[in-house]
Length: 185
Image (cartoon, rainbow, N blue to C red; front, top):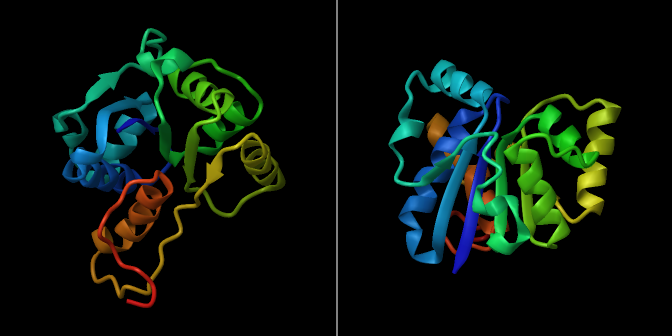
């Protein structure tokens, strides 16, 4: 059973975090712990984009951005997977350069050093050369860069369905079995 930490940063794309949390709660038979850490900017962006504060209502463990006592701040916490969704370029840059100045970057550092699964759902576009080099550094360190680029094979009809094409891909990358659209079916 998996232990998963979700980090939500202040990049645009709160819908991705919301939909991921909701889908993981449906798939709760595949994980034992689900923890969340949000930056203050993430809370503001969520309120702006989704016009609510429903992130407060999910039955998961929440940790403050400076709570270095969180179990996933140490390799001995044995968290399998960290998903940063959306992942700001500032967060990616700190991870790529080994700067562990908050719980999100420290936890990503731990996941990488323990050779576990780090999935960074980057949302910015276009990319500059610094972004690309930071994505390369995280990839070379063992992380997975998953741009929040929706697909349209499934003929999504709503914004939620479009966002879920990314969320379903993230769930696959996390090694969680879900019933979602598959090419060729």
